[in-house]
Structure formats: structure tokens, C-alpha cells
Image (cartoon, rainbow, N blue to C red; front, top):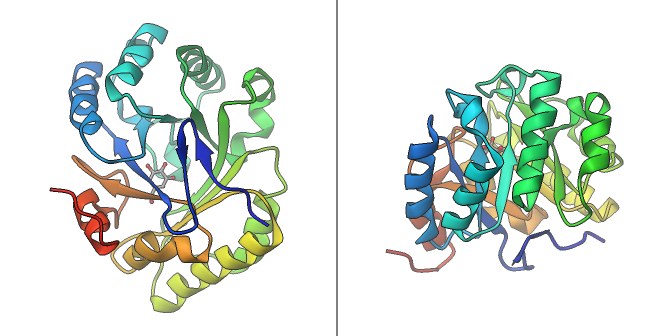
Length: 243
Ligand SMILES: O=C1C[C@@](O)(C(=O)O)C[C@@H](O)[C@@H]1O
């Protein structure tokens, strides 16, 4: 039986997944301004995609802490590598050092691509118990075969949450992602976050929670992946009001 997804003070329920909104700005000044905007929204958590920053030297513990304070919401800290659709090429030492700074600054969750886990053993040892490790895997071109096996494998890794994002070519691919999510949710207690991306996959962002996906991404300023719908649209679909 799956555990409830909890990121800081934000907890998913049976009837409602958590909603995360990404920040994808290029400078700390812009990030701080976006954080002011997001603070006022009903987003449950905010994901900071630091791979969009033009200058990583701006990513000091003080700056991360200030951004977190402005947000006043639990934060997921993410370096999405170029290999998985992000903006910044993986570099072992820099990766370890910026994640270390993020933990010092008090983020509630870190996203680590599962293919990097073996290379980041030292970092994993430094992560306190109350900071969630989201192990992620992305495929921006297709929805691979054997999604059940993929999720089953992910849920056995030393991570707290398993996240899988894939790209559909047709409605069957979206259905396969949802069914694989339901199977994994039955077979493991690791909380899941799954999505089928692009326009075809939008339904998975709205209804994936019924299959066991406990967090969905929506957009306020700028999307971080194809198919994320505006936060207001998503909340309206669930019958929640947000102007
Ligand atoms: O892993 C994910 C999911 C995502 O790719 C999406 O499709 O909503 C968006 C990313 O910012 C996030 O890190």
C-alpha cells in the first residue's frame, strides 16, 4: 500500500494530489520576483529548476535561503541535466556542491535523476532524513515499453519518491502510463509522481491521482515541460476556485 506523499508541510490526500509549480528563471533577481508571485498562489509546492540559471555562482546558500523564505512554501530543488531534457550538462562536483548548498539552505526535497544515483553516493549520505529524495526518469521522445518493470525497478532504489515523465504518441501510450502507475501503486509503498507529457498527456496531469500519482505540475508564469496547464485551469477542473 502506497504511503501518502509528503513534502515539508504539504501532504497529498486520496482526493487531491499536491500541485507543484516550477520556477525557470535565468537569474536570481528574476527568481526572487517569481517567488513573490508564487507565494500568493494556492500551489502546494514550488520546484526550482536551477538548470535554467545562466550563472550557477549566484546559487549561494544565502540566495537559496532567501528564495525559500520569499516563497513561504515547501520547495523541490532540481538540476535537470541535458540528457533528460534539462538545460545544464551534468558535472559531478558542481552537482554535489549545489545540492549540498540547497540542503544547508533548508529545501524540503531534491530531485535526483535515477541514472545519477550511483555517481552521487556521497551526496546521498549527506541528505537528512526529513529531506525527500525524488528519484526521477524522463523520456521526451517516447513512452517506452515495459513501463511496469521500469516503475517496479525505480521503487526498489534508495529514494523516497519515484517520478516518471514520458512522451505519448497516442492515447494508448497515455493509458499505459496510467495503468502502470496503478500497478506500481498497488505493489509498492513508495509514493509515485507520473505524467504523460505534451498535449495528449494533459489528462494524466488532471486525473493521474486516481491511478496513484500523488503530485502534478501546473504553470503560473512559464512551463518547465510540455503539457503543463495553467494552475487556475487545473484547479477549476477539480472544482476548486482560483482567480
Ligand atoms: O520531472 C518533472 C516533471 C516535468 O517534466 C513535467 O512533465 O511536468 C516538469 C519538470 O520540471 C519536473 O522536474
